[in-house]
Amino acid sequence: MVGAEQTSTSSKTVERLLWFGGLLCLGFCGLTALNATNAEHITERNYPATPNRRTYPRPAQGLDAAHVEGRLEISALHVSVPILSECSDSALRLGSCHVAGTATAGGLGNMGIAGHRDGSFRSVRNIQTGQVIDVFGDDGHFQYVVDTMAVVSADDVSVLSIGTQPELTLITCFPFNYIGAAPKRFIVHAHLLSVQSN
Image (tube, rainbow, N blue to C red; front, side):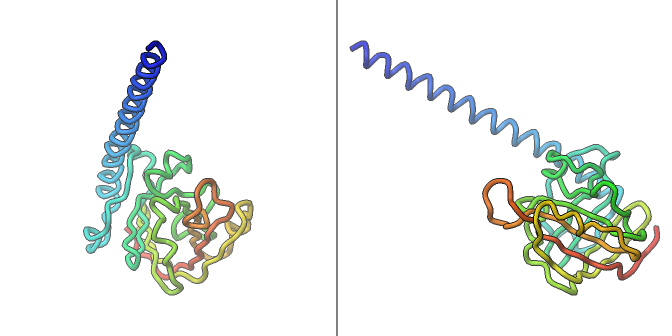
C-alpha cells in the first residue's frame, strides 16, 4: 500500500511540474508576441512598406524605435521584416539585423543583413538570381538585384569583405531543416540597382 501511495504522490508531482512548465512556455510565447507587435508598428510608421506589403505574413518584432534601422523586403518571396541594429539572438527572433561593421544601405561597400533560417529568412531558401531585394531606411529606398547564392562554412567571413561598389549580402544558417546549431551558412549576394532618396 505504501508503494502505491508513493507512486500516486510522485505522479501528482510530475503532473504539477508539467502543468507549471506548460504555463511558463505559454507566458514566454505571449510575451514574445506582445513585444513583436511593438517593433512592427515602429517599422511601419518609420519605414512605410511597398503597397502590396499587406498581403505578406506579419513578421515577429519587438524592440524600441532606437533599434529599428529599416525594413527589408523580397516581394517575390513575400518577405517583409524589420532590420534591427543589434545582432543578438533575441533580436534575430524579432526580425533581421544589420551586421556590425558592414556598409549602410546604398553606401560603398558590402551591407550584411542576417536572419534566422527558421524565422524571418525562412523563405530565403527559394530565392533566385535576378530577384529584387528592397531595403528601406532613413536615407531612402534601395533596390538590389540578386547575383549569386552560395553555401559556406560558418567561420567564412570573406563573404562580408568590403567591396568598392554598393552591395548587399544576406546571411542565414544552413541546412535549412537542420536541428540544432547549423554547421554552414547560406549566402545571398546582390548588387545595387537603384536609389530613391527620402
